[in-house]
Amino acid sequence: MKVTISVIKADIGGYPGHQTVHPDLIKTAEDMLAKAKKEGKVVDYHVTKCGDDLNLIITHTKGVDNKEIHSLAWDVFKAGTEVAKKLKLYGAGQDLLSDAFSGNVRGMGPGVAELEFEERPSEPVIVFMMDKTDPGAFNLPIYRMFADPFCTPGLVIDPSMQGGFNFEVYDTVEGRKITFKTPEEMYSMLAFVGSRSRYVIKRVYPGPGNKVSQKEAVACVSTEKLSQIAGQYVGKDDPVGIVRGQSGLPAVGEIVEPFAFPHLVAGWMRGSHQGPLMPCSVEQATPTRLDGPPRVVALGFQLANGRLVGPVDIFKDVAYDLARQKANEIAEYMRRHGPFEPHRLPEEDLEYTNLPKLQQKFKDRFSKI
Figure (tube, rainbow, N blue to C red):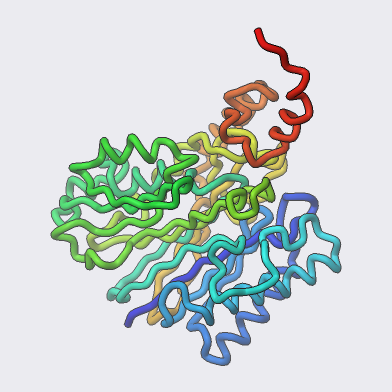
């Protein structure tokens, strides 16, 4: 059975401020998706949250970029926005950057990650959701899942994985893409994806000799950058990602292992700071300290003819307690820098914030040295 899993998210109102999603928004989404399932428009669904982002996980048989599915998600977000406005939630509808749906939510504010594939006899899928950061936050963990044998022993032990994986990388500034083959082009790829504010890993495909078709992506990350769509800062991008596992792909334990290291990512307060990415449960994904630090949630499912069996709230595991402790230590250290770099992002990464307005205000006060 060929199945599509679509993860579509949007910030349509938080409370208080940027902390979490109101239960009424979740209920609105669940009611609308339950109706769609009953009508046969979708196979299954799960509604969840990460920070102040409402996340829709939908399975269907219509393929990626399907107008009907994207229209359904858009309608859910619009209905949720009306609820948010009645409750006077903060930033009601802030990720919906247009009033006219054009057949696809890409470029309209919401973040989207989708995979279409032939469902295997056993199909584990991990859905990742992040808050208070941007798509570049996925670069390091996705690289480690599919190209680092110190994280993924299967690259050494499993013969079907020794052909490596191919990484589709987007240049979000120039609007172009490139594919790197690993392991042979790993060093060249790292030269690009290490610049996470510009180059982001979009999809991963199996290399030669793998049990999984080389034509089917096995990982996908949302790469929508709100600031570039809106032309100004309207909230951080808060990306989502989907990763398939096992049987020629990284095991579930290998997929989540990179997040045991709370690496520094861009975002946090006003999208203008660097901080550690803290792995946590859905319940713990309520960033409050300076609206942070940034969070990542992982929900694990088994697919059964498109039905979502689960989820398992993976980072709820006590094995990630040390990562959370380390993230808090890093957050404390970074916070002591106040408005100074490296806690605050470098100037070139602040072009969509209020900094340009300050530069304009004081430009006539500068004199030549």
